[in-house]
Length: 255
Ligand code: PEP
Image 1 (cartoon, rainbow, N blue to C red):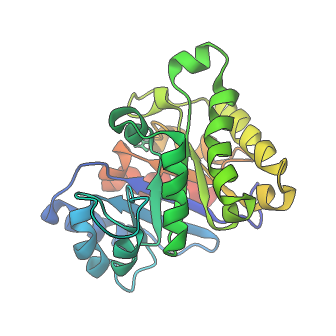
Image 2: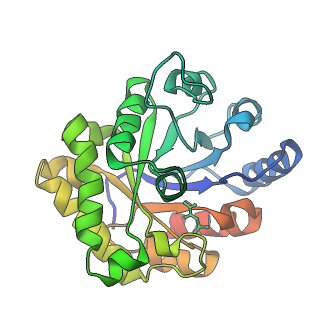
């Protein structure tokens, strides 16, 4: 149970969408979601759509965010998008260190930590994604990997920064594969994350929102979300289908 912790269900659209498809999806979400005390909903869209989304969701209780942010604030960094630019579009959140950024674009722990710090400098709430590959899990290295990913951020920013951040445990082997972590597997790593943070501050560790991501579907969301250290979900594929995402949000309401 998550009394006192902010809960969140967020949709990571990845590199999907179009102006028309986004509008249809957001219309369906606005019609299907109702505000729930202590539970937030958000969508993470590709950069070019943020302006349209900030107007489509203006006045709505549904938040929005970006999928990445530069570690730099301004200057000669062609192709990058800064935290201050994201703030101008009303972004509340930003993903940092998604496994696709780490694996496909070579982002290393120090860079992810710098992005986390940049997000906070500009008043954004970073959602720090951590998680192990299948090979690492099979070698029994899940805690080493996740611990290292967390420590890179904590060493740069200090534990206090976690007061205004979210951590998403996303096992790489579960992302987009249709094979989710079992509720027990997810709970075990979430408990480990909280213990790791508690080494620096138990109070902050107890309060931080921890999301699970990796093949969450309407059929498995309820069992995942009722785990004691799971405070919501980061949803990829299923967030692109309104009925599926709404059903997942409903499971969080009842968790
Ligand atoms: C993700 O992209 O963060 C994700 C969890 O994807 P999926 O739900 O499709 O596994």
